[in-house]
Amino acid sequence: MEELPAVISTHGLTKRYRGGQLAVDGLDLTVPRGSVFGFLGPNGSGKTTTIRMLMGLIEPTSGTARVLGEPMPRAVRTVLPRVGALIEGPALYGFLSGRDNLLRYDSADPTADPRTRRDRVGEALDRVGLAAAASKKARAYSLGMKQRLGLAAALLRPRDLLVLDEPTNGLDPQGMREIRSLVRSLAADGTTVFLSSHLLDEIEQVCTHAAVMTRGRLITQGPVDALAARSRLAVTTPDTADTVRVLKELGVTDLETTADGKVTGDLPPDPVPDLADLNAALVAAGVRVRGFGLERASLEDAFLALTGEGFDVAG
Amino acid sequence: MSQAETLPTPAPRPGVLWQLGLFRSEFITVMRRWRTLALLAVLTGVPVLIGIAVKIDTNGGGGRAGGGGSGGDGGGPAFIAQITNNGLFLVFTGLAATLPFFLPMAIGVIAGDSIAGEANSGTLRYLLVAPAGRTRLLLAKYASVLAFCVVATLVVAASGLIVGAILFPLGDVTLLSGTTISFTEGLWRALLIAATVALSLTGIAALGLFISTLTNSGIAAMATTVGLLITVQIVDQIPQLHAIQPYLFPHYWLSFADLLRDPVYWDELRRNFGLQGLYVAVFGSAAWARFTTRDITA
Image (cartoon, rainbow over all chains, first blue to last red; front, side, top):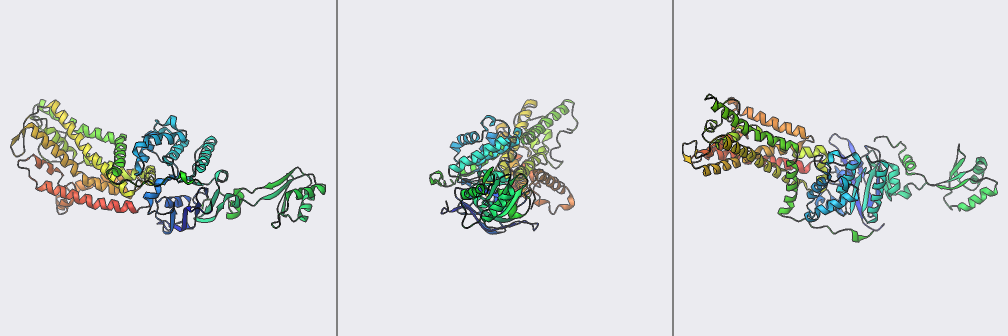
């Protein structure tokens, strides 16, 4: 995966709005081919402005953006037929049925074959589970159904890249799960998925890579495992004091004891001790071990460590 | 990841089809709005009202035709007196009555809403990432507004013809110059007049389209376009402002009556077409310049 060219790459991408507000500041983003890329950041951090620049809707103030290897917004006409997008929620013609909405969007694409249009629209509706409501006016759709119809519009043709801005917004837990499995199956077909969200667990569940943005700047990007890799040793035991003493002797640092009888600490980096040896040492010292293992730090912890602020803060 | 899944980019097919798919979708979408149907219903109603008013007036025994339609603000041709002799004149009266306000107002609503309305509902961004192409979308939009000009004009003309045929006798047509032509030729002239009226609306259609590219609010664009129309029509009536009046888009609108002379008096008609062409060129380019460079933030 490393050697394949990036699906999205930006260099110094910057957008300053007319009011002088700096929405995106020198963004260097690389989305590897075949990844499910989580684009994280609180509301107002510049995610949507970035996506709009990638889709050629907004002209960057400076910097460059390439999508599928072509410069944007210059190559809009050749690139965008291979890209499905859901930007800032769905937008529909309320007086048209769900099916007619998709027919309209498809006829806007000059490279889409009009002969296969009806079939492709039907398949897209099937894929998002809207086939039964296809003839209903979009005005009567619930928020979740609108979201699905927006997704269907992105799936009208086989795409190389899907850009999904907050795709699970307004969906119930069941709907969220369905969207996640849809994203996974698309990714399995080889489609690169660029997924923006302010929900950390959503990114953690489906994404292979992630980037974090706050206040218009990119803080970090890379494989999700690497971002959240600060795993800590966790021992559940009634004998916390003994545990701390033994682990300290074995080189474990930053030891913490929680009230419910759990001791956590960072493993010494070099050489990394065998966990079985650590456990044996604890037992040999007479410590009663109830639970033992590595606890992976969540992306949320990583985010907090990176930004030093809560996730709900608007940038 | 499997490269077999990634399709080669199909080359965009140039030519007529490239334009027509979007235009058809655009026009159908416009015609399916309730608002459009309501506008057309109002336009249908005008000749009906005039016809009934004239009928009642003549049955009542002479006097001036009141209320129904004043044949274009006094400046218009005197078609209305002819209706009782020949129902075909209801077509001309209907067009003369709707051309100053009703028809351009309908065009202003459709043109003003064309881009701004899509921006307002957010559908504009999805059309553009489809990707419709900005120039292509603008052309499709303008073409569909022009198609609506034709439809709206034909609706008035057809309504006038049907109501005229029901309420009044049909027959040979006495032209404004006094010559008499056959009814069939009269029908041809009516069609020519409808075409002229539709062409007269291309200027305000371009103006409305330009205004529509300036804002993200469909209502604001519609109101501005219609407001401008009313302002221009008022300015066109103020004698002290006669110096600028030849440059106002509605100034030569009622020249279509010259098609009912024998020989046809082309002078003002030509000026009308030239003026409309100028407005289309100026505001069409302005709309293009604005729309192709604008940030789509809605």
